[in-house]
Length: 334
Ligand code: AMP
Ligand code: TRP
Image (cartoon, rainbow, N blue to C red; front, side, top):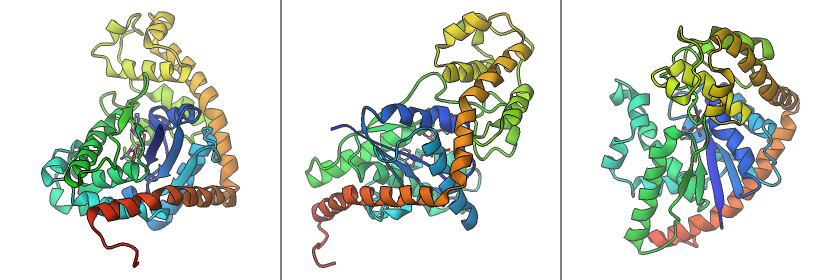
């Protein structure tokens, strides 16, 4: 059986990188796999979140996922903290994973920065929780952006060590699913930095809630270089901003980068940007209006999440039971 689990953090407004690198791919997978999609609020609090904002962002992420076309009946869409198994399994994985493994995680180093001593213990142990998210459902495939590959390697290591230590085949060894041309969307202000929710400049990203005018303005102001659009993929080499804008176009148009080079090679950036913003507005506009419609119907969204949590718990509970028995916890009395 092929089962997908993926997660997304409710830490701010969703942007084009989340859409092209994650959510859009989820939509394509729902016909092929049994899919669970999780809004990972427990991951979010590894760095400070204003409680009222966390609630609003949790709903907004769920709305963006629904607006992008995830069918909540066919798939399980839920909030991590609604299913106790995530915390239960994460603790066990804290005791399986080695300090040395977690010390190698580059995302922790990036997020903790210079103040490692001041980072939360949760931020350090975050990859164990992510492994728990996945293995709690015995997921076999995990669609993520490039940046999460290392965490998936760790998930495989944890599953393998657990299975070896306890002499079982309880956990599957998961496969990452990494997609197409824009798996890594870069900042509009600096083609060497990832587009991110936490960038202080709003002009660095296109948010899923930006209207057509704002999208056009941000693309117009996006950083470029003084050359013309290259007419071959080789010509993109060493030009991160050109690579980024052309990659975004290719992803939104569902075409290969070569085709975009052939189509726009020799153009001025200003003209290409006008085409790019028309395409972005055409693709994102319907999603934005659906998000806005759902914002007026929070009861519907909460209902979807309640139903999702119930279905997720039904899968998770027997797995926790099995894990507890395997580990040697006295069960049946609690
Ligand atoms: P995050 O915003 O870090 O919670 O990421 C949620 C999902 O979006 C993950 O699957 C990430 O890999 C993906 N993602 C985040 N930022 C980008 C980006 N700039 N380009 C492509 N994928 C991204
Ligand atoms: N760590 C992922 C990110 O920052 C989010 C995430 C949490 C996730 N749990 C997951 C992704 C499980 C895939 C599967 O983007």
